[in-house]
Amino acid sequence: LSLELFSLGAKCAFTNSDHTSLKLLSGQVIANARSFEDKLAVMYFVTCLLASSSLLPESIEKGLDVLAKLGINLRGKKLSVEACVQETKYLLSFYSHDEILNTGPVTDPKLIMAMKFLGQLIVGMTQIMPESAPHAMYQIIQISLLRGMSPLSPVGFVHLGSYIAKLGDIREGYHYVKLAFSLLDKVGSRECAGEVIGFGTQVIGYVEPLQATLECHYDGYVAAMASGDIMQ
Image (cartoon, rainbow, N blue to C red; front, top):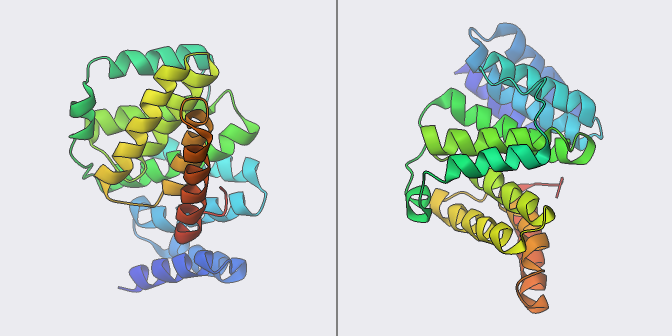
């Protein structure tokens, strides 16, 4: 009960941008939790705090450390953006559109938290480590297909659509953006809606009328503000 109260307190402190309280509460949890899994929630809030405090390198490094302990190693990946996109498309070639949408939810608590860290990493990496961000995208999609969908699964698909569009195939990129939008409704969570709509709108603008793009931008802004997603 005490651990849960401290974790909830850390979440409230992060939501209120109370950096001092978050550091104190997270420090207590990290020092006294009985297992690594018990520390994951507050460690996630700490990485979010670092990112929102313009300390992206520190946030990314902490996220990479946590993921490595969860068995997901993103360090030392050498694939180019093009090669990573092709590998992701090959993985997806074994699944139909309907099969992806009807994939059940992930149930492993550690994987659910891993997806949160991956979702946080991909935003930061896109800004200062663009060559590494596609590897986080691949991991999100791979876990979603093999272990089940999480509220962060649409993030992987919208970034895939964005990368494909940047590489020249607007129509295929648009396809994955729309799939990400459909997954938002399917997973039943608006946690990452601001990010998904924000990135997806950049591709939609090349396919749909300008009016639709403006509406998407507004929807993304509303979704981000509702979830406290100040990074968008």
